[in-house]
Amino acid sequence: MKTFRSLVVLKRPHHELWTIMRDHLVDFSGRIADIEEVREIDRTVDVDGMVHIVNAWRVQQQLPAVVRAVLKTDEISWIDRNTWDSRTYTCAWTIEPNFLREHITCFGKTSFVAAMGGQGTRVIFEGELDLDQSVLRASLCSAEKLLAGSIESIVATAIPRNLRGVVEAAADFELPR
Image 1 (cartoon, rainbow, N blue to C red):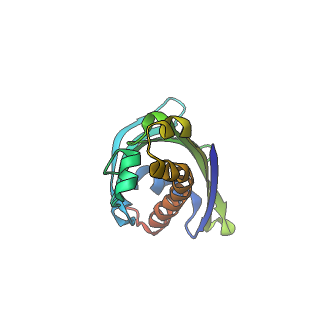
Image 2 (image 1 turned 90 degrees about the horizontal axis):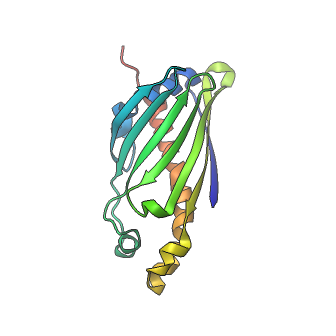
């Protein structure tokens, strides 16, 4: 199990950044490096006012042949399922990748906290990634096994970096009038 945590401070009030991230992700996702598409699949609001959103993500990265062999895919994409709690300005989420789905568990929480005297937001992104190495290694050749060992670290680093790009794009997004 690999844990990760990232902190980003942006000059945008937390309630605005929160609303943009929750309600306008699809609108500004084209401005995020390496993101090909974010598509909202489902949105529901429960009786407590919690907003539940399911998004499909696709990125524009070419994978080396050995990585494609390990992941058994040419495309990196995932489904994120998230729950937005307006009482605490937090978003609980899970990520379901299109590759090795049965061997990867990834979940966490993003918190939006007022900063800079109310003029900014501290975004705290934390989660856990678990890649079942034993099942994965059983079907790989020796070169692929070496790569498989580092996939968990690579992904655990890429997820917070991706979030940074997303929240920076959100902070620059102009809300429709």
